[in-house]
Length: 383
Image (cartoon, rainbow, N blue to C red):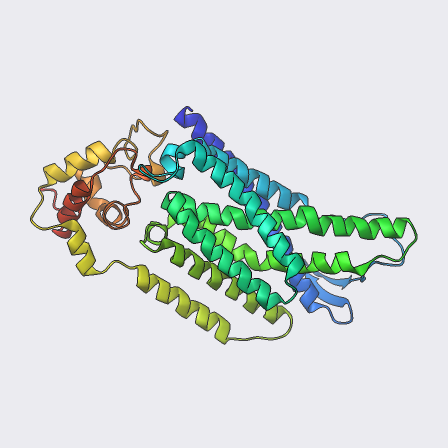
């Protein structure tokens, strides 16, 4: 596909995905908070210069209102735009983004496995929900399977794609909860009232349960979808453990706010979350010794470093790139001065995590990475 057209498709899909996701997550956060604020099925709120009195009927009001507002299209739009982005970015450019050279899967099979895993994730989770009644046991099972998925995806896909794949699997679970459980339960409530019979509370209770599950999955999914900006995380040798750890911390933070909305402020939760994030950051930070070992020994002249960058990096990071429509993040490496200014970034993504070039599309060798590391360790001199 033409790089310019591909970039615009990515931009439009990402823009729609982010906008819809903000709306969906916002409604999830609001309604779970509202449920936790209820006192005798009623909540008083103040916003926008006025007071609101919100009343909840379980399982249904005596009669249906004339106007009933639904909350579903934000979920569907988020998933559809996210899947479109997965297709445009990772499937159309599978050689670059989805798989690595020498990986266990070819591009065709990688795409098939990626799509199949989205379906498998929902089927397994849904069966667990139907068979495991205790929420703590269910949470432990979901965590164990998410860990297995994170490890498996790290073996099958490129590091960056592995994070996105796990996030897409959890996002698919969330939207399937809406489509297959929550909305059908709502329709059953309406149908019962229209037929003048007492609604069965069981589907509504299960819908509430799945809604709470979605609430806890939001922050883990958001991290996975933003992870392509953090090569130090997905480029780590134990990236799958890093992913699971940060997802758990995200759910833990969500638990703090859910408890707070219910009237319980448990300050040790954010404290332990902050300590957890700090521990992960320290654990994945490359040591000086490892950096020196990676970069090799001996001095490397700027001419040699520049030749490597010109061959392996400039095809994308240039004033006039030939592999993409515009330099990613605006980073250009045409001159020695630009290389010197971006030396820390080059060391982080090309030497330490080896996540660049993406998919190693230009074929940078370990010897070339070591040479760049040696040049940077010596001060990235350009004279």
